[in-house]
Image (cartoon, rainbow, N blue to C red; front, side, top):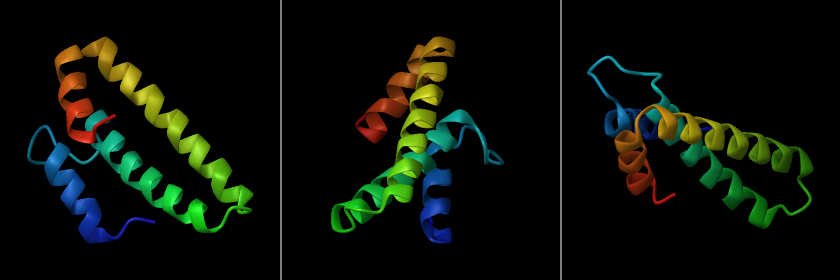
Length: 86
């Protein structure tokens, strides 16, 4: 679960316009942060299979969103991918 400060920081980094809260880039940024947190959690709790399933769903969703950005606007994809180092 993301803290409010972390979420606002990601929103400010990836938003396209001032009131943007749900564009594809923002969603990918939020998913990436959640994936990093879940990965850290699973390194210490190796038998937490329900969290592992949630992690795999988030990775799949992020992959879908990145594929969408790449098809619609390759320049935006390059920008997001370079920021996230994906």
